[in-house]
Image (cartoon, rainbow, N blue to C red; front, side, top):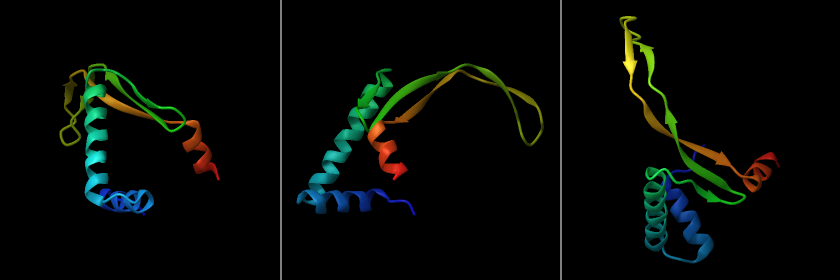
Length: 93
């Protein structure tokens, strides 16, 4: 099963004793900072837990699955998330 955002907010609110509204606001702010920094090309790192960075994708030739026709896919960006040592250790248990 996957935890959705409202379940995450409720769980953090219960653990911290803060209201769900406050936790939701903090979560929104964290995501805003991630978007701002990663869109600038900067890496966001939380030591031991994770690192998130923007990666570049080169232009390439692809294929239309319906017609088989070759198409040109332009260069673009993607996001890479790397798990840190504490997260990897918690998953390994």
